Length: 127
Image (cartoon, rainbow, N blue to C red; front, side, top):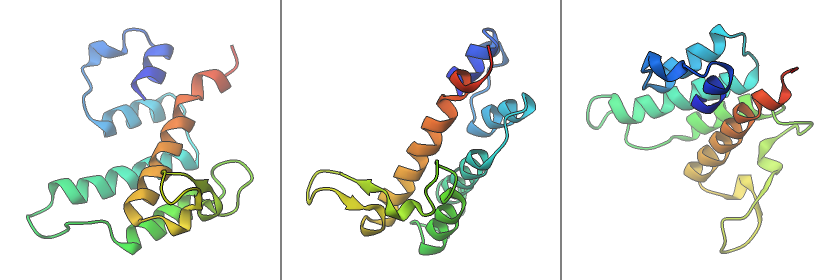
């Protein structure tokens, strides 16, 4: 997100934003919208719940977290209807549909896909 913001505004770094939500709000203020940003919000909310809640309140990803994220992601990446159909290869045992990977791996893959989509914003904008 920082690279996208700095491409649009070379002095963006002067704002000294250091939080994910600050960058996300800055992109939204510039008119960036769409399902990718809903995914980014969900990822940030889940990460915050894991990192900042009282000790022991939430220690790992739940099926509910991933179901909600997958629901937001389905249809957000091209013409796919379900991200669980994507083939992902983490090495052993080889390429598998995302549905066969752990919740943490599903979370990471959807997060990487959202980050990659955000990173393409400058290339998609009219020059």
